Length: 315
Image 1 (tube, rainbow, N blue to C red):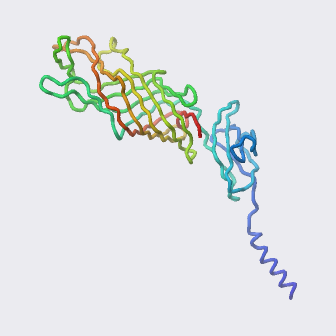
Image 2 (image 1 turned 90 degrees about the horizontal axis):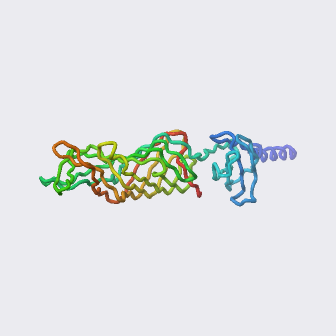
Image 3 (image 1 turned 60 degrees about the vertical axis):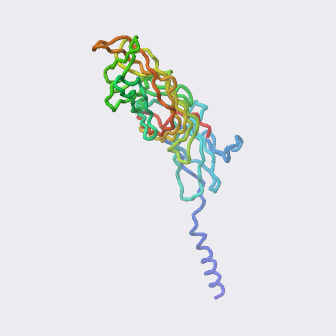
């Protein structure tokens, strides 16, 4: 009887041990790109490497623990990281880990920016002879065509355009050589155009807690030069366009969204117009265009072959 009791006691005590799953130390790691080279460290210190130069996808051997691991990815032959972040492996049932790498800063075919708070408004011209006020136009957003990276953090577009749309139906009044006021055809839209290298965006920041979003400080500029007036007879804008603020952007293939907030400025902005008398187009002239500096919030959507934006990553 005593032996039977001892056997039952040992069996009952052993049940919890039998129910426990053994700590697995093998984890299958893969990324959104094949051929990325993986390094796993115990901490950010250079001498704490646990797994080194392993081409993904791969099975790696690391102990289960509560403390996170520090992970780096590199593309073959490149010293700049394709990903930096932390990896948790504290669940014995976890058998795989997926990593969304950073973008190469690849090509974006088109992106469109639209303000939904603090939309800039331009005041153009002078009061009319009948007391009509100067014309006010509202910004309709930005369009970037073929934006690409020049170096980490800095991108430029083959073509960047914006415009101010007139909604009030008033004529734009300009001055003739004698100082008289002349009405010219009502401008529906005042476009502004910038080309490669004289427009650009610089981003510095890094990844958020998720692999699918980034946060960065954004500074962008565009110079709209006065080069078209001898070829195309229409009103357009010349001057500078500067934005400084914060940006939250998605990081997924093909279609991405960006939310930015900051200060929008148009230093030295002018409208290139022409004089009209009795239906005859006269010489060109520039008119000061007042756009106050203002805090804006804008949403942008882009279509391309990159995962998110080109960012100089510091975290």
